[in-house]
Structures are given as C-alpha cells and as structure tokens.
Image 1 (cartoon, rainbow, N blue to C red):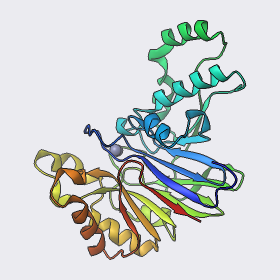
Image 2 (cartoon, rainbow, N blue to C red):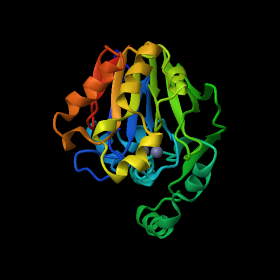
Image 3 (cartoon, rainbow, N blue to C red):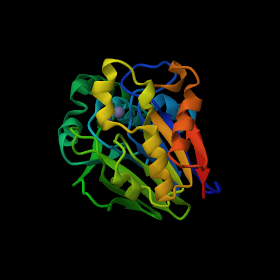
Image 4 (spheres, rainbow, N blue to C red):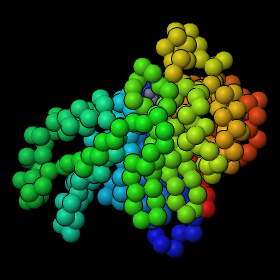
Length: 290
Ligand SMILES: [Zn+2]
Ligand SMILES: [Zn+2]
C-alpha cells in the first residue's frame, strides 16, 4: 500500500470452511495498516483473492496462523512458492522467504515439512531460472498464552495473540493488530468465549468466525457446533467489548445456501445486542478504519 493511503483496511481473502464453495475461498483476512500487509491464515485460493486486489505474494510482510486446521493452511505453500517464483524472476529481490508467525504446537511440524512434496519442482525450476535460492519460510513460533502477548512488531504496528476456545484443536489463537489507525481483532476459529472479549476490547473492527446454529443441519450439528460460534453469542460479545464494526466470516453454513441467509445472520447478531455496522462477509468484503 502506498504512503498516500489515508486509512487502514481489512479485506476478507476467504470466507469459507472445508466445504468447497465456488464463490468462497478458504479462510483468510488481510489487514493493511501502518504500511504493512499482514495476512491472517491462508486457506485455499488465497493467492487468487490477493491477486484480485493487486497484492502480490512479495508484498506480504508476514502471515499469521491461527491453528492447524487444514482449511486455514491449504493456500500457504502456494503463497510461498508464488512469492519465490516472482521474486526469482525479478532478480532484485534477494530474500523471498515468507515470514510466518504461528503458535508452537502441531503447526511447527506442518511448517517444517510444508514444502517437502515440492523438492523436485524446486530443482528443475532453479535450473530454469538460474538462481540459487529455494522457496522457504522464515518461521517464528510463539507460546500460545492465555493472556494477550505481543508476538510481532514492526514500525508503528504490533500484533498480539492469545488463546481462544477451539478444543480439541489446541492451541488455537486469535490476533489483535494495533497501529496508530486503530485496532483490528481476528478470532480465527473459536466458540463464543471470554477470550474474544479480551482480544476485541474497544476494537475498531472485529473479524469473527460465525455459525448460525438453527441453519446447521443433520450430522453436521454434532461435529461442528461445539467448537464454533453461534451468531447470537457473537452479537453479545461484540456489544460487551465495545466493538465499533463487526465482520462475519468462515460462515457455517454459507448464507447463500439457505433462504434469507444474510438476513438470518444479521437478525441473530442484533438479537445478541450488537447494533453497530455489520458485514456478513463475502470474499473481498472490506472495511476501512482510521
Ligand atoms: Zn476453519
Ligand atoms: Zn478450525
């Protein structure tokens, strides 16, 4: 983003779940603030959604991961390799490693081996492109704390993390991005919990995963409801935390899959007591702040 941009912006790069949906990429949120492009999770097709808003993989300053569910990670190797290829072709780019910040735990092993299936591809591409480097991550692991802790800082921007409730997927964290323009909280996957209230206290924008319990049918109920967030509870959380603007993502089920889907999500949030600006997310929905 250029220095002439007056405000910061949050863009949903993917609003889906593991269920394939032709209009929704896998989970991801881009926060552009303080001259930084910060990506939170990288589900399937993240590079395509970023390309649609002219954010090249090389333009990302860091990627933050919330937990080790595949729907939040499936686009990560794509991002790393696209960054390397475009950087290698540009010659002027010396370090194409992608900075990845993640809670220590199962993600450590996933990240260590993320690029293993592609070693033969790297060999032939290196020959083609005449360079010495290979795609790589620059990984920072942190201990997922039960209180807000700073996990990344650069310039005027700092990112804090704390655990949320997505058991048995442990650890699962949410993030809080603080900059002179304001505060954005990103829940990752979580049930409605007090921790999100701490993450999102007085936030300008809260990006919250969302489920509409009455629309979750059949066998799916058993498997998803215990560790995702009913929208009435999200409305209660957002109101209690003094959130200024609320964006719903990771929608279970997707609102286009049932009648009056968007209106039903809105009604549930309102019945929880939150009455501020609300976006029932689509891919590339964006909200400015600051
Ligand atoms: Zn998920
Ligand atoms: Zn999950």
